Amino acid sequence: MANCRQRDENGSQAKDRDREFQIANLRAQVSQQQAWQRNVEAAAAAAVKQRYQQGLWDEMRALVSPRPEPAESEIIYVEADQGSDQVR
Image (cartoon, rainbow, N blue to C red):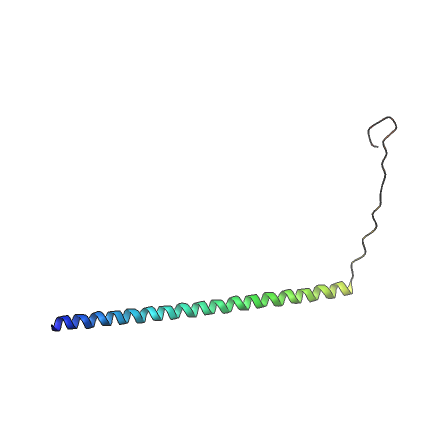
C-alpha cells in the first residue's frame, strides 16, 4: 500500500515537473517570438522611413535640376538608287 502510494506521488511529481518544464519551454518560445516580431516591425518601419526619405530626395533633385525636354524626333527619308532595290 505504502509503495503504491509512494509510486503515485512520484508519478504525480514527475508529471508536475514535466508540465512545469513544458510551460517554461513555451514561455521561452513566446519570448523568442516576441523578440523576432519586434525586429521585423523595426525593420519594416526603417524600410518605410527610407523609402519616404528617398522620395523626398528625388523630389528635391527634380526641383533643383529638372530633366531637359526630350528633343523632337527627326525623320530621315532614304531612297533606293533608281533601278536598284539596294539602299545607299
